[in-house]
Length: 333
Image 1 (tube, one colour):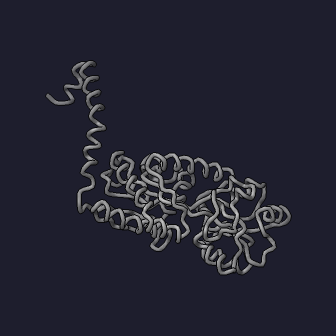
Image 2 (cartoon, one colour):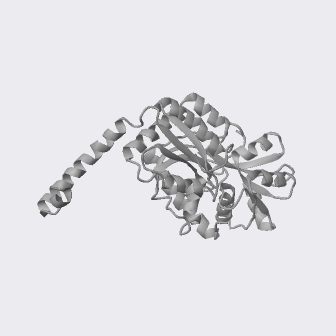
Image 3 (cartoon, rainbow, N blue to C red):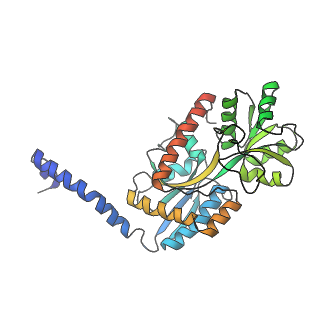
């Protein structure tokens, strides 16, 4: 007889069959993951940004190691566009077979709010957190000739006169860090969005901007060369590349903590056993001395998290930036 007929015979039979199915679901899932992935399998690692950026470089670094350690072929596939949502949608709609991954960063946690009701998929439901890899902090920088020496000077100056701050675009870490600073201090520093961090830093060095809450990797070369001055780092700890620069917490603003982090997700329907297998392997890869060293040289703070911990972090980031976005009235371009 068919399964459909059996399920319709009686409440007792129906309950028994459902109980049996639940009892075998987890062992079967783990059995499927025990020989996953097949040797030589091809895993598509989608990076929703152009080649050369930090998220792309990190994906290539860990992708190579993942391929070597799991005996598979990892293909990096750059799919930029639509504020990093084109590549995310591609992965969200991919088969949940453990052979497609998405490189995500803070942008995606922000996009859950900015694109709410506009996107054709749900970042929270159609993608599943796999592993957090590392984060790079926001560095608060001003022109070398500026009279602003620290965060308190910035607050005083912002309340005394009109200041402007550049960013690499609407909804980027530099923009949201500025919005958070304004909210925490009841200031109104004007936001000036650019198409990328480089042109905004050029204008800052030329004195056309007052301050930038910059991605660490973009501004650190200019800080080291003396063309810009860093007045604070929005991180929980000082950075060894600029050990003299105090954290925002040390300067009395612990809530002003922001990082452009990078992580990995898979299609929402991917079995948990597969997600855990890949997620735990990615955590181990980030702990390899060579990988950790290269990551730190790029300005990353390496504190890898597995699926469970990354899920909690993802949810907290989504909620945190949602409140900032709504309070500031920020909308997507």
